[in-house]
Image (cartoon, rainbow, N blue to C red):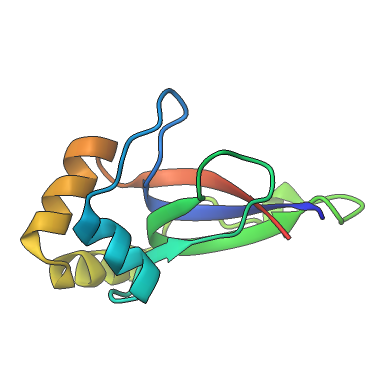
Length: 115
C-alpha cells in the first residue's frame, strides 16, 4: 500500500477538523456514480472516505523516487474551470447547496488516498 496524491480543483467533501455527515442524497450520488465530478477514492489509512466534487488536475504517489513540482498542474486552466461549471450546473440544486454550504467554494487542494 502506498499514498496517492491527487491535485483537484473543486470542493473536498470532508473536513480536516471534524467528520461531517453526508446527506442521503449525496451519499447515494457518490455510491452510484450518478453525476460527473462527484468522486471517491480508496483509503486504508483513515476514518473517512476521500471524496470530492471537481476536476482532477494532476496526480503523484509516494512510490516515485521524486516528483518534479514544475511538472504538476497546480492551477486550473480555463478548460478546467469551464468543465467544473458545467458539472456543477448539472447537479441538483440540493446537492449544490449542500456541498458549498458545508465545504466552501471551489479551490485547488491535495486529496490523499491509498493504493
